[in-house]
Each structure stands twice: as C-alpha cells, then as structure tokens.
Length: 221
Image 1 (cartoon, one colour):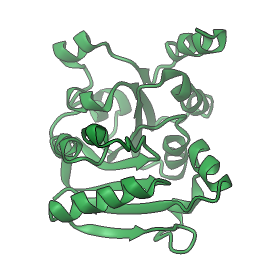
Image 2: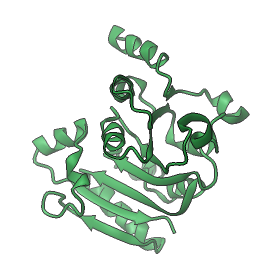
Image 3: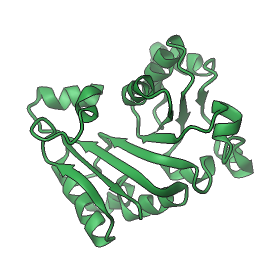
Image 4: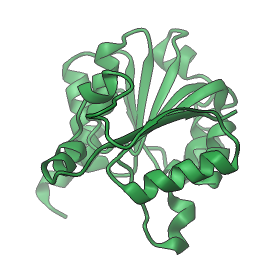
C-alpha cells in the first residue's frame, strides 16, 4: 500500500469527528445511532447525509454555508475522505462528521426519523444491469433511507451520468414519489444557486470533459 495512503489512514484515526466502525461494532450497536444530535453534535439541528461523499468537499461546503444544520459524509474510501475530514478539522467546523462505511450499513448507523435530508453526489453509476441494486437510487437503497428519514425528507442527486439520471427518474415514477425538480443541465437551469456553488473534484473532472451536469430532488413519501 502506498505510504501516502497509510499516512492518511493513520491521521483519520486522530480526527475526533471521523468514525470507521467495524462490522461487529455495528451489530453490537453503534453508540451514536439515534443519538447523533444529543451525543455528538450536542444540538437539535437537522441532520443531512452525503452518501458516497468522496473527498468530502460537498459536505464541508454545505457545513460552511449552513451552520444551522449538521452534515455527515459517508463513503468507504478512507484515503479520499481524509481531505474533507482534515479541512473541516482545520477549519474547526463543529457541524461536520465523517463515517467510513458501506452505504448498505446505513441502518446500523442511524435510527428511525433521524435524518432530514440526503445528498448523493456523483455516485458510481454501476452501468451493468446485474449491478442495478448497487445504485444508490435503487428501490433497495430508497427503502433503507426511508427507515431513517423524517417525514418529507428530501433526496438530492447530482450526477454526470445520463443513464443513472434516467434510471432514477424511472424509479421515482414507478414508486409515485413527488419529484420536486429536475434538470438535464444545471448550467442552463440549476433550480437553486447552491447546486452551482459547490463543485467537487469529480464534478470539475466531468465539466472539463464537456459533460452536462444533471440534478434532481424528490421526497421519499
């Protein structure tokens, strides 16, 4: 393993807002499950999750703009998440946390009606049909989100991938979910300036290739 990765893994362990529970710990009961506000953030602000947060730029950007909300970035790639964890630590942001875990374990980390909002930013589209269930907007994942979402919780998807975008629109229609907004090109119709304000590493990469950035939001009920 490259030395740089090992150094980042080691530094992640020193951050007080970075968690990477083992599977056995999740089965035994993650201590913050149902208690993120009271035990970690120590406030009653809404909780917003970024799923597949990558380097964490979006989580940090949101936390800087909205101090009245709590933001938690989730991903399985610890070396990538290090960047967001370090930036938020150096900036002394108190409304940010990171959890290194597979998204499939989300119900071990959060309890019923604990999450107010979800952001899914440039996830792996899993283009092969046998991997459909791995898409973060698949019916299986939406069911997981419902178990921890507050009534009326909003899900945002921002992606470069046309296939994933169309797939998600189909899932929304099939489940008869309220589609609040969608655009096939945020530069022509962003819906909100926030969608344009924060650009992640992956968004910049796709923009440089001339790929239109797509965005939609819907509720789970």
